[in-house]
Amino acid sequence: MSQRAVHVSITGFVQGVGYRAWIEREALLRGLSGWVRNRRDGSVEAVFAGSADAVEAMLAACRRGPRMAEVHDVIVSEPAEAVERGFQVLPTA
Image (cartoon, rainbow, N blue to C red; front, side):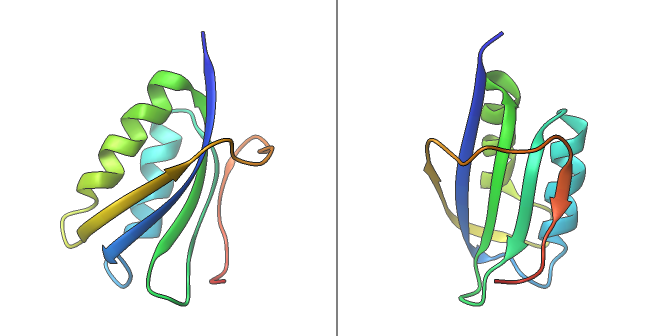
């Protein structure tokens, strides 16, 4: 099974709508490791690591977002830094 790690930046109306908590739930459901945090510029930043299929499914989910969000763009860069097991919600940066 192929592994993949990505760093993403999500822009749009993505703060104040439960986006970080939603990402945490979705990532854990897919067995992904990584983290998510708000950025002071209004975006959400995350790292996802796990099976390539699960990461791809997570990226597709991020493009939709939770019900109240309005996603404008999901910018993906590879490779992401090394990721410890588990998923964390980090403080705003």
